[in-house]
Amino acid sequence: MAGLTLLLVAVLLTALPHQNMADEHSHQYSDSEQVVVWINTVGPYHNRQETYPYFSLPFCRGAKHDIGHYHETMGEALQGVELEFSGLDVSFKNSVDKKEYCSVVLDESKMRALVYAIKNHYWYQMYIDDLAMWGIVGEVEDGPDSKEYIIMTHKKFDIGYNGNQIVEVDMTTEGKTKLEIGMTLSFTYQVNWKSSETKFTNRFNKYLDPKFFQHRIHWFSIFNSFMMVIFLVGLVSMILMRTLRKDYARYSRDADLDDLERDIGDEYGWKQIHGDVFRPPSFPILFSSLIGTGSQLAVVMLGCITASLLGHLYTERGTLLSTAIFLYAATSPVNGYVGGAIFSRLGGKEWIKAMLFGTALFPTFVCGTIINIVAISYHASRALSIFTMLTVVCISLFVILPLNLVGTILGRNISGESDHPCRINTVPRPIPEKKWFMEPWAIALLGGILPFGSIFIEVYFIFTSFWQYKIYYVFGFMLLVFLIMMVVTVCVTIVCTYFLLNSEDYRWQWTSFCSGGSISLYIYLYAFYYFFFKTRMYGLFQTLFYFGYMALGSAALGILCGTVGYIGTSYFVKKIYSTVKID
Image (cartoon, rainbow, N blue to C red; front, side, top):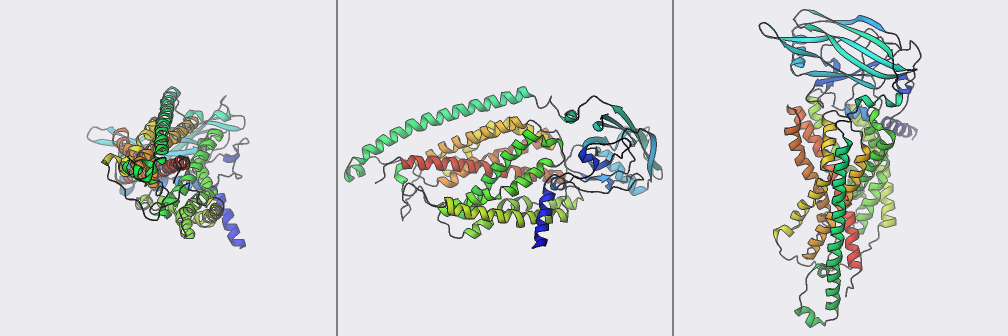
């Protein structure tokens, strides 16, 4: 038991960003104290998600070896942040003149590797005190007879300090050297320290791109989306209130007729299916699991946006992803509570099976893709190590599963009682034929257009920040757009469900979920447009990587919006049937 407790503590600590004794975490230095220069990854400039270990190329490290390779957090490990010590001897406020730190003799294989990297515009990333720097491996020049491949052998570091803290870092790659087989490449570095007036709290501003994230454009897009919300809410309220008022009047008038007159009369509409509207949907285990997962994802997304808005999580490597992992594990009771309650209301008996399915649904979907297999085959740094995968499994088994079990038990016992305002008929009512555009699949497809339109501008900014290494920092706008999307999704699914019920089709549960969830289809279609017209990505690895991650993101958002649509529609359906007198 003690061993299990220690394992749980270790798993949670790896999932959370934490502090340790290294100076780069306290960000406080004394004069002449060692400053660690970390090397991250190397890869093609136009395929920025395709990264490899820095020393997969024939580079060399400096003479110092007293600090080893490590990962801070689970978020860094999942992002493929491969921090390795450069071996460069750098100390606080001590400048270093141009100095050789290592050399490499080029044979044919090393020459071929460097030429390939230069031809594909490889670049690499380094860190000093959590501040990133970038440099190019080399460049191609026109020679007298053929192309000449030039490598940059000198790194010049300009470091600014304010008091005892580092506030600026810049790296310039120099020392152009023509590559030739058999030559000795001498790598050198230089360090210049300078006093700076930049405040420590503002040191990350240089990485932000305010010209791209123009607030005027964001406010304009949010204004348009907000006007769409007002229009939709007003339209839904006006149409449904007027239409439902007429329906109530007609049904009340029909209730005063005798049975013969009622049979001769014109009976149609949503009241006619009151005995079937609360019939459990097909595949109740899958349905309740999706609703539980969507509820959990909504809480996680809202928590991540709020934490980023208040805590500026984008300034630390992997912190946002680590926060998302922690929130997903901590909010597992939400999944169990909602999924267990809905499964119980639907009359489900195999609640343990439903709980296990709901627990494994999203993690299996995330881990079941071929992205990691492709990354391993390419020896990319994005490939997850065995330790990382075991840690994810431990989090799922020893944290998420027990919390989900607790939530399921609470959900079944607190909110698991059926509260349908109408009894369910023993024999299902036949569904009449109708126009093709009133079929559930057509309604579901149309339901995602307006929610996608409400977030279209923000999707472009998010895509660009993720795939083109622009740091997304305007989380206030993201929060507003997220809330607007929720309201639009609820309004649209309510209208779609009313049309479906009015055509005497009682299959509204899956239709309402798919109406909201179909936003994922439009986002994925937009991902195709973005890939071919907004990026310069190429190759099998990057293509699979891009579309694999876009499928994951689109599906997660679809589950979230489908859940919100179903919950809003469920309240609407119960409300209209509870106010109608049913004989």
